[in-house]
Length: 321
Figure 1: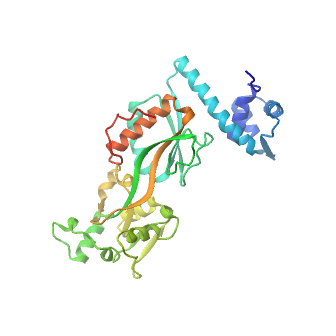
Figure 2: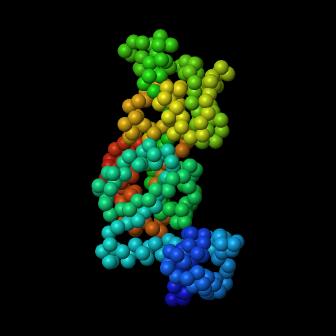
Figure 3: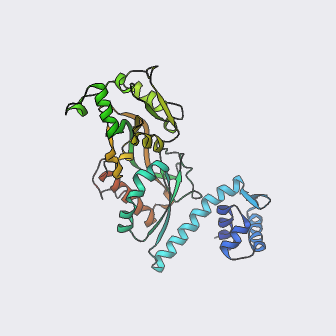
């Protein structure tokens, strides 16, 4: 078996992860010259430059990035295998997750995860965009794109948007539309009636102003009326907060209202929902499929998605990879 200088591999991993020779030397408790020596030895063995150096900061070359993706995963597997053999139960897992999903759905459920699996040390990496699937970013991901063949994907939720407003604002809508009887919530609002009130729009859903409301109106074979008042927000969390404070009607999805106690502050309007075309997946590198911590997180997320109504199925019945 022909192997590279093994002592150099943890040094390479630390420099690549931290983008710094000095930070790597501090983490590994060795001198910076020792770090440089190990990297030079590895580059000589491979015959490739692994880093570009600019002052105190270093960045991976294309070859270095490719090597890091493979080496980082391999070192993690060695660490996990050693911990299991030593009887160390703790699993340190980094999960990259969308900010709205994290804040409104995942974080409120974490106490239950800690109760069921106290050996898991979960670190959340929040992102506003679809994450790059790489060990350099996290161990596993919540993503909406099956963009890498090196990863496995477990579906959690197919997104749909529906109009909501606050309880107080719903009373205002009923008064202005003359719907003050007990059956008001069952009388469907027309698209024209919806447009009589401020439309709170989230730019990030379709990456264009009023894109969410354009898609919703198109789904009911209408266009946004020229008289409609549209208020723009960069993120669904902001639009939903504006709705909670009685500022108009927002489009939101199931997971935004499935956990928090303040979900009771909102009324789902008697209107159709529209599918966005996005499907949320839990993703993990296929080569790491045997890691117990990742599989515990996967099963727990699927169970919670089923119990919370995001996904159909029976809890604790998803043992496949």
